[in-house]
Each structure stands twice: as structure tokens, then as C-alpha cells.
Amino acid sequence: MKEKEIVLSGIRATGNLHLGNYYGALSKFVRMQNDGIYDPMFFIADLHALTTNPDPNDLHANVRNIVTEYLAAGLDPEKSTIFVQSDVPEVSELYLLLNMHVGIGELMRTASFKDKARKALGIKSGSEADDDEIEHQIVGAETNKRVNAGLLTYPTLMAVDILIQKAHKVPVGKDQEQHLELTRRFARRFNSFYGVDFFPEPANFDFGGKPVKVPGLDGSGKMGKSEGNCIYLIDEEKVLRKKVMRAVTDEGPKVPNSPVSPTVENLFTLMELTSAPEVVQQFRDAYADCSIRYGDLKKQLAEDILKVTLPIRERILELRNDDEYIGRVLRRGAEAARERASQTLREAREIMGIRKFY
Ligand code: TYM
Image (cartoon, rainbow, N blue to C red; front, side):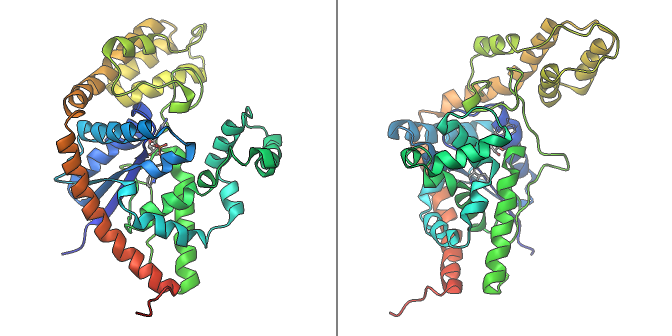
């Protein structure tokens, strides 16, 4: 029998999951798991979360949050390997080894690094001049505390998560595509340097569609924890409704068939993810003939989001204090993930010439 393709993905342990995580990642995890044709592995990236130096108790609580939210959204330990990144110490060793084949320059040019460094340094916007300013400040002696080396080598660690399990498909949102591109590049480089066909090159996966970017409610770009514009799976009904009703819009169309402004398009994008196609069409038509009332659109949107999130919220509340169950799931996941990881690490060491004398 042909071996099943390995599907692997993870989410950083930095807080509760929001609709961006859900539509960009978690809903796809569940669907891929339930397809039954893959060998699925999903983890909680606690080492990646360390790049922002969290409070230790918060970090631990966040790992619990994410695993609970994974299970509540439908990940099933009978079908998927569910584990915590740091429970697989082989990852840390391969991270050290792979870093020997990664250039500092290519890491510094990564969009996510520039973005995070900019935030850490308090530099606003994304103009060209920023790049020089960021580089200058990073290299400057006083700032080396603020942009740590873990942040720079974030893509190496992510590549190792994927390569150590020899994963083929990696369901992630649009913002992670550059990291996947780097992973493929590192895999090719390793293979060609040592003349081996060792690491497969992984690809994003989105059931035939394009990877999504879930927008925020504040009229800006994507929904993200650090942007403070999130709808969380755990949000209470009242809170969620309030957030949606407060979403930024504009003055409304004045002439028929006007172009939709980016802020309002964000609401349509959210609606396309959560509502039935005919409902979206009804509001698009109302926009086109200027009869749209944003209040109605928001009410409908809140209703449709709640249909997705409320059942998940209920299961989160049921599961989150069940330490015994969570412990059992993670122990079993760690064992399975380590088995594959330790074999890959053993072979990688051998390929690189780290061989024993005793
Ligand atoms: P993280 O924790 O930032 O995000 C987790 C997943 O959620 C997706 N996502 C979004 N998708 C669409 N629209 C949004 N607004 C949005 N916000 C977040 C992300 O694309 C991601 O899929 N580096 C990864 C974690 C990671 C990983 C890995 C993933 C570590 N190692 C190995 C895959 C394979 C990250 O930071 O995700």
C-alpha cells in the first residue's frame, strides 16, 4: 500500500485563536484530517512563541488554550497526531544543524522578520527608507536586546518543524507563504550540498482555492493578534456582536455600481467565508443599487459568524479544565512525533558527518 502523504501545520502559542487562524489554518486542518487520505500532524508552536519573550505562566496557559481550541474545533487524536513543539527535542537539534546552511542575509530580508523587527523597534509604516533604518537599529549596540536572534532564525525553526517530519502538505494562510518558500529553498540546498534526495519540498494546500487572508474589522489589512482587530473563537455572543457592529465602513455608495472601498470589501470577504453565497450576492446587489444598509449587513455577518464560533466556544468551555484528557492527547502525540523526528535527525547527522566513534 502506498504510504499516506504527511500533512503538518502548527500555530504559535501566543493567545486565543481568531477567525484568521480558523479560516487560514484550523478549518483546513480539520477538513484534511477528515478526508482520511493523509497522515495528519498538528502542533502548538511554543518555541516560536518564545521569540517575543512571553511571561512563562502565560506561555503555558497559551499552549493549553491552543490545544483545547484544536480539539474543540474538531481535531481528533484518533485521526491526527496532536503535539507540542517543545515535546520534540529533536527539532531543536536539527534547527542548530540546518542553521549552518542558512544565510543571515536571506533571513533579514524575510518580510515577517522586517515586520516584527519594525514593531519591536517602534518604527511605523513600510516605506523603503525603513529597511535601512531597521538594519541600522538592529546592528546598533543599544537595540540588540530588542530584536533577538530567535526572531531572525524563526524561518529555520519553521522549516525544521516541516522537514523533520518529511511533510508534503502544509496548510497555512497567505502570510506564511514566504516561510514555505524558504523551507523549500533550504530543503533543496541541503539535498544538493550533500548530494542526497533527503528532504521533500513541501507545498501549501488549500483545496484548490487560493490561500486566504482574513481581514480585520478595523478597515486595515489582516486580522491579527498584534493588530487588536480580532474576532476570537472564544468570544461571547454579546462581545462578538458588538465587535462586528463596530466594524469600520464608509459613507455608502452614492451612485449605482460604484467600486467597493477596501474597508467595505473586508466585510464582504468575511461574509464570503461565513455566509451562504446567495446571502453575499443579496448584499452585493444591494451595494450595486445603493440600497445597502451596513447595519443589516453587519447583523447578518454577526449571525453567520456566531453559527461557526458558538458551538466551538461551548466545546472549549467543556474541555479546557480537563487536564487528564489534554495530557493524554499530548503524550500520545509527542511519542508519535518523536518517532519520526528522531529517525530524520539520525539520518541528517549521518549525512552531515556527525558519526560516532563508540
Ligand atoms: P501563526 O501562529 O502566526 O498563525 C497560525 C496560522 O493562522 C494563519 N493566519 C491567518 N490566515 C489568514 N488570515 C489571517 N488574518 C491569518 N492570521 C493568521 C497563518 O497563516 C497560520 O497558518 N509560523 C507559523 C507557525 C508555525 C508553522 C510551522 C506553521 C511554526 N512552524 C510549521 C506550519 C508549519 C505562525 O506563526 O503561525
